[in-house]
Length: 195
Image 1: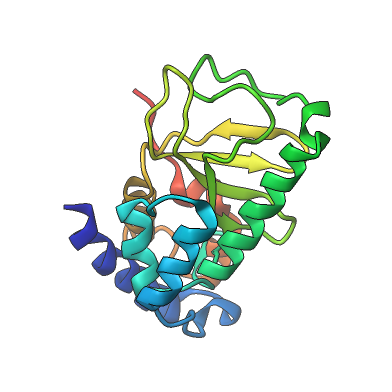
Image 2: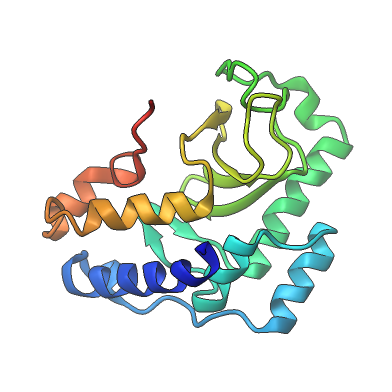
């Protein structure tokens, strides 16, 4: 289901940004990734891509704005993930404690290789797909990874949910001016109601 819905969501978001977004987001994002690029990313990560991520990357290989965050390309995902892996391996991340207690939703620690960066803001903060959650989490859930705070649960149980919620916010009419879109930020534009 999500593999068929994601291309339409991404296409709708691109069209909305071209019509309503500020000038800097109206340019087209990168074209979709090739199967060779997707395969290279899987090789770098050491496992198959989540189907939702592969579906999104086939439509747009980075440079799509979701609030103030931008989707990463296959190359940027691999590079960013490898930096995290190296910082775990050399013990750098062992010195940091997350600032947020997730109640078991997230795996303990500052970063782990199950966090696949998908979006990044201009400060290096990321939204990641979590393939290795805590005992109360869901495989595929979205996680904020903040440079100064570490991992924080986002609320979306998948990339598909994040994109769907984002589209629902955009299409609500509330953000139809560049100013409204810029003032909303990623939190407002991807907010998921907690039940």
